Image (cartoon, rainbow, N blue to C red):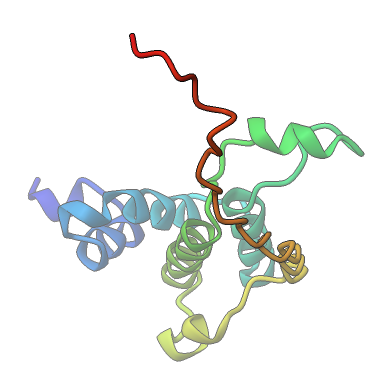
Length: 137
């Protein structure tokens, strides 16, 4: 048995696409797309959204999103999603052009909170003669 036969073709394609050491996390998520239990391309893409984006674990408890095991930062979640969708594309033999067009169906992030204007610093006044004791130490 030769090494190429040890893994399914989908997993091998993920290994080839994300071969660099710095891309190992994305290789893992690509293989999650390959191994998804989905029966269709659309279901697989939906599964990738669930895998890669933090959502509350407990319904109506926003704080519980912190215990979700998906990547935390938005850029990591997006990279995870694209890697996972690539795995779905390999699994369902979808053209790479179509795979690259897929966008996550997520609500846009909330706008950043406006920062209060910085307070003007008042210059420090030198101490008056009344504040300084006349005796030396």
